[in-house]
Image 1 (cartoon, rainbow, N blue to C red):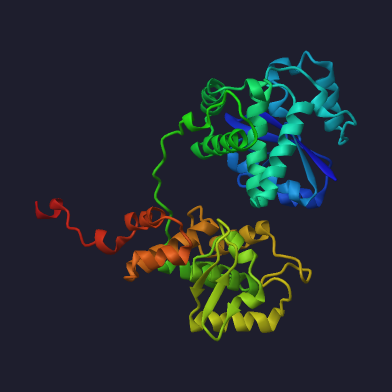
Image 2: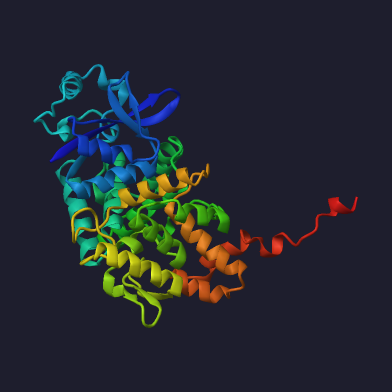
Length: 393
């Protein structure tokens, strides 16, 4: 099993995460798919942005046989020069070897290392979320968020109070300019942990969330969408991107599809246990069905509708992101397009074509209509008809 040592650095006026690990080409390929991943000749290591998004991508690697060691949460730079254990550690890593000593044995900060007590709490929390059938992604994110908070407080769980979370938000989250979504993830994890496992001084209901951001979804024009989905020459790649847009799918929903989920006779695509453990169906046009038939004849998938190079192995999310990136480049589009942009574009184009918002809510699988209403703010159907008073001058 490979181990990546993650260290927070400030490189070329940017807050970055330095990644140290034994040279392994397969692992390097996975690391390079993290957005804005770069090689540092000075540090002789790969580095990525110090953002919750990058950390989430690193956490996802744990599901692929990789161990992540978060040194930046254990060892501050201020004491690294004075600690002989850390100097030995750095030299050992630079030589391409991983130390036998557990990193958690180095005790140097208030944000103490995850001792036995914290490890037990995290194990108990993971077991609770597993039996409640939370998704693997949610379990990993919440567990990592709770770990950061407990390590920061360095207190027994029974002594933690609301002021500790307030201090964490001010002195850790805001100080390091972490995103609102990261702050909410920590709050979600902490509230779930204390509400369901402990009866302590911590008042779950008194926790206040940060003010929500109101960002508009990114939307592509129909012409841009056509250029993207027609640019791949590979039939499988073209089918995957087309189906995301044609049915407004999330990335995980596409990858979890099975051949039996395509009901060509009724013209429906069945999406099982999507976000929120909800099933839904979306319509399939004749054009989409024809495309899927051509794909099925060429690849003959067995277990998953879209399989990797080896039969019956699910197509990976990193490979899917790479497919989109290449397609966007070939289409000559300079925007930072993500897979979710295709889903946003699907909803917006439906709205502009006159589809009722209630139907769009059902097609997207939104629990609340308020989530769907955001597309009314990016639809150009009515906005473009508004005449500016400037034109009358």
